[in-house]
Length: 457
Image (cartoon, rainbow, N blue to C red):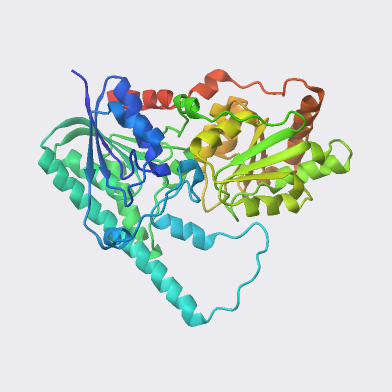
């Protein structure tokens, strides 16, 4: 008899949110492996759906959608017409949901100086902080309401499960899973962190510590998408790294794109993280090569797909490369994947600093599927990032870390020159990935890692 799994995730297909990707892919492939998967998730605030994820959930045994009662839900759903919601690759904010979106936006700094607005009165500034705190409080109370609604739903279902898998965030998912195990609804519990644990207010750090202690004490297995996340939460040595990944079946949806063959084409798709991640080293390295006469900037194209074309162009303009930028604007997911397939090389950026280590963007995982050289820039003072480890393990590109700038800028220039010379000569681009290493980031393989934990938890 197939093992019965309960998967608890606030985000799930067909919800148009990046947080829905990992749980949906896990449910899809665990179902194909013979597990009977029941999903407990939240009702989206909008009716917009992602067609790719909608397809993925087709074979899942059961999806129980919970609608919690909260002021935040009432505020977001209050009788307004719904604006069109862009697909996953078109969203301005990809890796974060809930209260942390506001926190990251508030702390972000632009890559280039922006026109300064008129002075804001202190009273207005205080009002903004009050409203921000109110929103965070509403988000936290809504999460607690979701936990209560889930527990009521479990009582109504009256089913027993072999294993419950909960994937954070928000906090409620692990709370529900912990209580489900304690009540005997599930025999074992796997606590998954697709994001690192955060709280909306500094004074809640005691809550955060108690929350983690309960996870450590009662979960039969703990997973996170990177070693850095485990370390930040004090779970290194205890948890298992099970990364995010890509789904090769998504490639079948890509839109066929042809780019002119007389130029070397780079592509960057998705959100730019001002003040945290910076593509400046790539543009600086190309400027240096051009000044040496080693390459002609007129034979280069930098394609950007997303909502921040002005920011991308400004970063290129600092090195006199604005004319080489092609801004595609917001595009469908199919076109984004098609652009990655058509480009000669892909640009990626992340960060690794004392505040956050282990950040591996979902876009980097999608790039692995494209089969093109990746040029990764890592901002921050801590060397040896998890993102770097992935690129070097898979032999899929070149990494520049701000913490290793002296050595890495030379390697970046050499990689760019090799790509340029090969393209201008009409020769194959230098790219020799380790196919077996890349394969472990396919969601089919990632689901296999979870299956091993399920069978041994």
